[in-house]
Amino acid sequence: MRYNHIVWDWNGTLLDDLWLCLDAINSVLDSRGMNRVDEISYRKIFTFPVIDYYEQLGFNFKNEKFPIVGFLDYYRKYFEKCSLHKNASLVLRKNKMNGLSQSILSAGKESSLYSWVKSHNIENYFNDLIGVENDNADGKIEAGLNWISQTGISKHKILLIGDTIHDSDVAAEMGIDCALVSIGHVSKERLKNVGPPVFDSLLSVLSYVERC
Image (cartoon, rainbow, N blue to C red):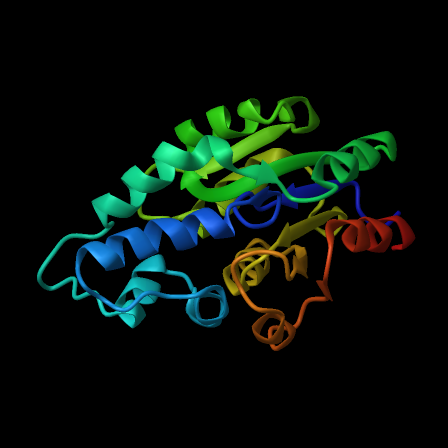
């Protein structure tokens, strides 16, 4: 196989939390009398830095601080109801059986990432869990660059799998290949305009990795 290490994004790629992000942001929008967002429109505008997405929803951060506290409170309250995407555990297990090592690189706070992964009983599949040190979903590129400078794995042997345009940007900055899945926070149409191969399921990504 071409790759011997997979770097996974977490939110939207392994974890199915799109519904919770929609519920959380709509809870905030409702409390302010702002227009709600549905899944289709959300996946058309969600972006990094996340503050830009909030501004597209109508927030003005000249008048208040980012991140929005109400969103994080709601997300954390109901996080335990999130499940992994279909076949996520199977794909992780198959990769391990095929001799691939794996890590997670997330824009989530690293201290939270550890507990999130452990709650789904998949921590044993990963060499490293890499997150950021803030609640702004900011700093993923820097975290990735820091990790890859220390890992010792050849860049051409690493594949990053994510669900956003930002994941493609992160991979490019790290100098590694990327594959995208259209099961998370960004629409398939937007992902297809980026460049890396786009897949409709985690099983399709597994097949891609196995035949490379």
